[in-house]
Length: 296
Image 1: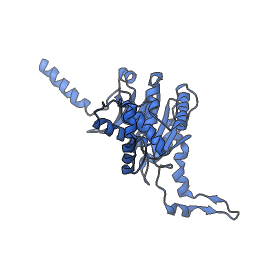
Image 2: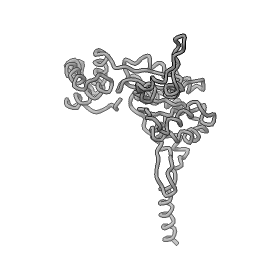
Image 3: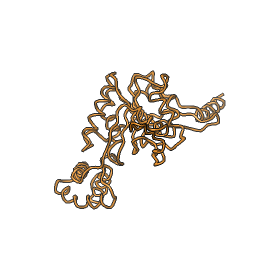
Image 4: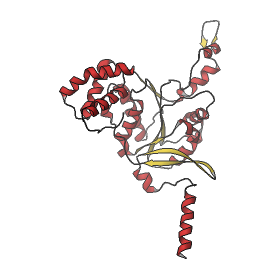
């Protein structure tokens, strides 16, 4: 009898590997974020929420020179947490300027108030309807986070995101917002040939054609747009100084590192918060400083 019980336990364990994991109430309460994952099984492909219990260490105070964007997203997020009207948000602009870090910092700031994050890869956006359905009955407030979002012509996730944003009553829920980041303002590539579809009326008025209308229709469904730009040299050095202080550097050491920081940015061909972080990590490591900060 004991042998049969063991064999049944082994069989159930193997079957569980082919079934979607079911979140317990403890998972819902202890997790501060979730990642939507997909798994192949003998029964087909299924998606499930993977709970993540550690908060990102990046905070709102770590983000410099984006005060306008910071205040806008904080205001929108607080409205959402209070059950007031709030917008889906599209953060666009130069790479490494703090778009995704700002969303993670909001989670860090407001997780205690019931804010939760669900990270969804672009390739899994077709599952948005299923994701929202799982979240709709929960008391927490969820931000569905799509990082580095862009589409090529014909990708299935494009229409799925349009429906989730504004196109279907069944896909909307008052405890779910979508925050997305992208280097493209309209999320899709734009070509010179698209301009051929513009129409000019006799009075000189210009009307975009169907190709252009389709390409901007997705980004326009985000109610709040936030644009990010590369920092000036002095702003870049301010960010470098902040991260070097995180590694315990003295003011004299920070001043001595300024020249190296500028050379680092010149060799990388850009100035950004990410480049500043990477320099501080390299400089701090070479000078024996302790690693105590997460990548912005």
